[in-house]
Length: 366
Image 1 (cartoon, rainbow, N blue to C red):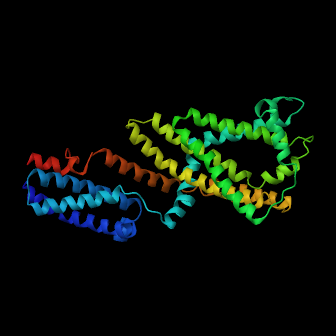
Image 2 (image 1 turned 120 degrees about the vertical axis):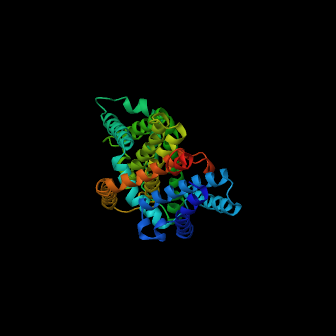
Image 3 (image 1 turned 60 degrees about the horizontal axis):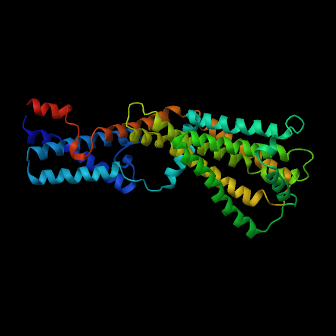
């Protein structure tokens, strides 16, 4: 078959790819080119046309077709490549979709989230029990936290909670940085798995021991302590567990590659980790504002306890109700990312497209 005639037949695909590029450049979505390109179907079609254009460019270059055709294909391939592998810009609708649709479904079905949750809250509950049992385990709190640390905790909460608006704002900013730092540490060490589990377990044991010790009846400042920690506890503790889970997902991709190169395996795991760490970041911000404005305020403990119950209910609704029903759509979205990564693995550059099958094979046979 004549190469020029073959490529001429493919001009309709080039035009279709151009329309998709225009839609993605203007609105960042393929469905603006037509309803048939909505969602995962549009992304898969775009990736298929992009691979075809790469193959056409390689043929046109190899058989020295007219320079105008080669230049056109060069520009089309470069334009498509920039859209397919671009850095996504921030869009409010995309953020909303990430937090309220993708993240809960990923969290619900991720085994790393289950492991991190069991490790953190299991050790937290166990340490809280051991720290509270003064008769059965009298020295446990001293061994874990130290006498100086326990004395500092008691002195810190001896005074009643008071504060001004300026104090609340400054402390909210401090808690955002402090809480996010804890989460980022768990997330960053997750790539090595063992350090992440160690930091997660260490925080769980320390926090649980402090909670148990401060709950003892002979601790004078226990009422002030629980009046402070009750409101923001659910947000903050859940965010720590989610941060570690996102890090563990990256670490699992580094060591369990499933036949991929380590770089591609980590990249694929990152697609699943991003929604989880996004949800954790949101919870950290909510915890920081609660810890800065509600926890130290003179509001009645009944209100703070009600806020804690409400936040726990919201988290349960977020994980279970929003996470459970949409497994099919989420698998389709994840499959789309996998398809794009597989396409990228198949060619090192636009001009080194896969010519071993399809029309490339027909050309060689001709």
